[in-house]
Image (cartoon, helix red, strand yellow):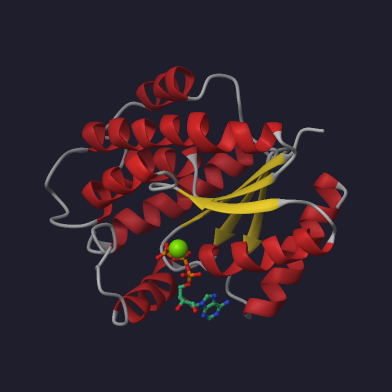
Length: 214
Ligand SMILES: Nc1ncnc2c1ncn2[C@@H]1O[C@H](COP(=O)(O)OP(=O)(O)OP(=O)(O)O)[C@@H](O)[C@H]1O
Ligand SMILES: [Mg+2]
């Protein structure tokens, strides 16, 4: 039997990486094979693309170059990992996927790039495939960014290229995620991330039970 594909989306420091681990434990308890993966950087070659995208000067290239790199990473990720795992019956959980490209490179940069370019790139790199469920963690960027900068103090490699962008970018991007979820309510569930880790986890489990019957 085919597995499932669940994506976690939302701004910096909204709790994606924390919550994805907790959901993986829940899914395992339910007797399903599951893996956690991430974008960018879910494969070996993706790790190299990730470094280009998330480290260094915030203006080192433009939104189009970013979108192209994200979709290159995504295509390799699908072909080498996501699709083969789903075919084996695995529940694949991805820390970010294509909604992040729309939210950051389109909404974040205040529509500097056309939406059509991102949709066309999706068709080319991903095709008709889409997540079975997308959890959008919604949080005031002021709170999320404070969490991210705090976490970065303990990291060797500082992945703060996007965190360095102005608050307006992050507010636009947050609105973008909400717009996407509004346009695709069957696939997306928006959850208030301004809760304790345990509360948010139980909200996520509720959504997975309701939408995917697990
Ligand atoms: N509900 C919460 N309340 C308070 N702090 C939290 C909560 N969830 C996560 N954190 C803390 O906030 C920081 C960011 O969380 P996490 O890494 O899960 O977010 P993220 O969405 O993956 O961030 P990034 O976009 O930077 O990858 C971590 O230090 C984490 O321990
Ligand atoms: Mg994370």
